[in-house]
Length: 130
Image (tube, rainbow, N blue to C red; front, top):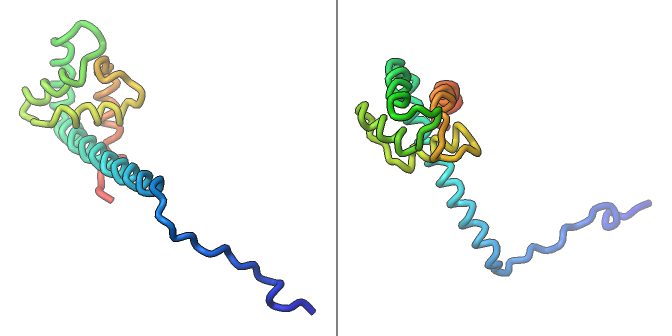
């Protein structure tokens, strides 16, 4: 007959020493969570303007086509067009939004048609605060 001592393995004791690497990882995770919240908030705010005000989509599209004959604009130009249409956003929030809806794109060469479509599409992804 097996004794209870041999049936269960015990975990090793918890090491309670201070690890500087843990503090750095915890700080990095906290900063990452903070940035993630900023990205979501910015994308939600810009998406509200473009999705909820349907004329904004066409007005921005028209303004982008007047700004450049290329198919791309900079995030600063997106910011200026939104500002000219009465929507004051932080330029950094516009950059965050661009990087969120079009991952991997150069913020200084944003394909504006894809950006506007992605903003409409992503509206429902971020529609509620969780």
